[in-house]
Amino acid sequence: MSEPILSFDDLTVQFGGVRACDSISGRVDRGSLFALIGPNGAGKTTLVNTISGVYKPLAGATVHFHPDGKPVEDLLTYRPYQIARLGVARTFQNLGLFMGENVLTNLLLGRYIHENTRLISGGLFTRGAVKRELAAREAIERVVELLDLGEFKRDPVGDLPYGVQKRIEFGRVLAMEPELLMLDEPMAGMSVDEKQDMIRFIYAAQDELNTTVFLIEHDMGVVMSIADHVMVLDFGQKIAEGTPAEMQRDERVIAAYLGTEMAEN
Ligand SMILES: Nc1ncnc2c1ncn2[C@@H]1O[C@H](COP(=O)(O)OP(=O)(O)OP(=O)(O)O)[C@@H](O)[C@H]1O
Ligand SMILES: [Mg+2]
Image 1 (cartoon, helix red, strand yellow):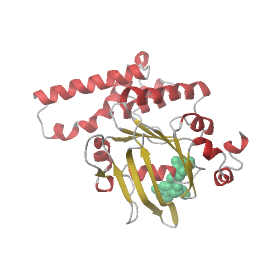
Image 2 (cartoon, protein in one colour):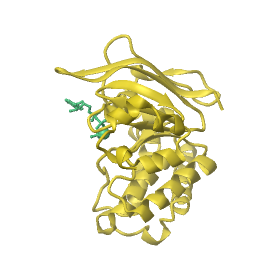
Image 3 (cartoon, helix red, strand yellow):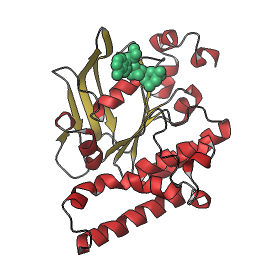
Image 4 (cartoon, protein in one colour):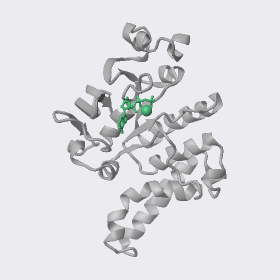
């Protein structure tokens, strides 16, 4: 399991006087669960935003995506929607759902990344368009089943409990059928039971859809029990990386977390 799906090198992002990411390098192995942790403001979301094309790093950085069986892609040359189409999907830290629309519609919106150029160029009723429509419906049905969303299918998202909304957001990115899924605190604000469910769904995505997971998560208990590899940021710097067990006894990591959850455990 040592083949990379994502590699980045010397990634630096500057916001005015703040160096949100300072020369960060790393790689994510295909099929693994990679966790990115660090205190508030450490640069975690910025790193994901840069990989997904939202922010541009300073010159010298590289971000490479290694799609299965295809040539390596230089992600810095693409816009966010193109990166999503290549197979790198991400969720946002704050819910980005259409609260007035029902669950199915929200999931379908995830599929549009595969559609919009064709819609613009016409040909809605061609054989190709019909096939894509079928593929989209199948992908949605698979996600509904995988995430146990059947009973909520027709409900407006705004009427559903928060834990279910987070699950729908996860479903929307899964509907894109990504090879690499980046989740920015998918369990924030959840109860222990909801977190347990979410972990089950993340495992299901890995096992049944062969998705590699890049997870930003604050709950150390969750990270330590499910991650294959952990990278730790603090004040924009990578301060450590390794197995969860290694991170738990790393002096720099412990120091960065003094006074936070990890110290209390
Ligand atoms: N768009 C932006 N403009 C200016 N500064 C920003 C922007 N985005 C992030 N920052 C700054 O960059 C630093 C890193 O922020 P980032 O959101 O990446 O941290 P984080 O590790 O995701 O934190 P949290 O755990 O709170 O989500 C912070 O100092 C933040 O204020
Ligand atoms: Mg963040």
